Length: 500
Image (tube, rainbow, N blue to C red):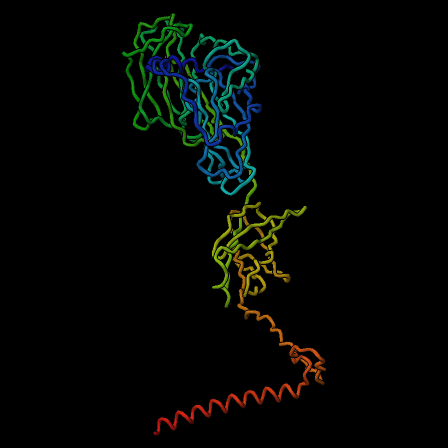
């Protein structure tokens, strides 16, 4: 199988002054990613696209790598790495599909065309709410620079990672053909490049090189393609692919539909040089396996080329779907106003086999932080004893909410859904209880003695502690009566004085 090299691309670039721009470009600035360590350096490999044993300059190579992003990663965040300078002007874009649903990309990636190409992969919203997001990626690059080293240097998270080259090193490109040929390749911007290689020696003595090129239309397993820019690039080099020179005196143009063109390169034709004609077409489909063709008549020589479209990048990604639930605390009842606003309530939730138990604390009127778990997880909820408060009696806790099932013991269960959040409400009823009045101690009952004690011969008066109760009561009554009579007499005397 003949090798379709892209050495000619470099020559065409020289004619279009692109080489000058690239030569002045420095290494790409260090890429900044949300997850710079997502790529596993040990997983990076370089292989040949065609399965050959070695790599030559301008050959296409395949780069593979594995990646992982931490839980909590969301769409719009990035990861990636930097390619070696030997793969300059890689330039491509590709999608990494989800393993669960290949129609949905888990990341969109691009490879820049810098002197050291930068790979940037942007996560899609597909990763939102997933855990354990991991995958692989691959893409095709061009071995643009020769090297005798057995490895090339990739950069991951600022660290150089050497990766082996198949066959060891990147050798010189294949020599230019000695007979007329037509080559094609896919470009980074989604077009097909077509190129005629016309050795001058094959047209020695001809007054001119006349090209009539016709694109093959759709049908018989072929897909439609057409030219849109109306451009034709014509130049020549030595047979060693040196000294590129533009040819400016050619004539020709595309037809109005962009499906064919006529071109003439006037003589004299130099037998020591190779003549090139290059143009681009836009494919109607970029599906893997779509086939495109055209045929050129060059001074009666038929040159037919077919290009099968192949995907130049891809991979796979996967992650566990998750959901979540929240717990909002409410306090009701006649005693709600007497409950301190900063009182904390603890909810226990458990799940899995073996059982995992966790707790979350929340205050009245607040919602606890989001609790995220794998989709399908069955969660059991219960409330620990509410705080003991004077004058407050707590009723049984009540869990409620869409998707919440109450249990006989006062707890609840829910099943975590995919990408959804279940809002759980926990309500406690606080009832005011009457204050507790401590019991009073009744006065001590004194039992009076039954007889008077003997006075003896002591000169001291007795205290009366042994006087019979009847005498004590009689004496007390006489004392009260005397005081009353004294007061009454004083009142009457004052009255007479007033009358006189």
